[in-house]
Length: 79
Image 1 (cartoon, rainbow, N blue to C red):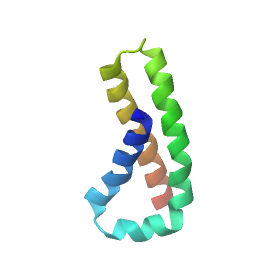
Image 2: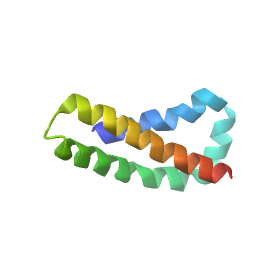
Image 3: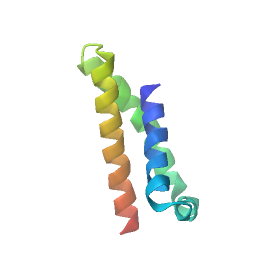
Image 4: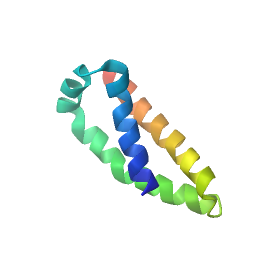
C-alpha cells in the first residue's frame, strides 16, 4: 500500500513542477511509468521487511526511493 501511494505521489510531482504540459509527455511515455508501479510496491514491501517492521522509517524511505526512481526515469526520458 505504501509503495502504491508513493508511486502516486511521485506521479504527481512532475505535474506540480511543470504544470499541465506534463500530461502530453505522459501521453506518449505512460508504459514506462506504469512499469514502475509494481516495482514501487515491491520496494515498499522490501524496505518494510529490512526495517524490521518500523512503519515510519519504511514509509519515509519508500517515498524517497520511489521518488528517486521516478525522477531518474523522468530525466532519462526528457533526454
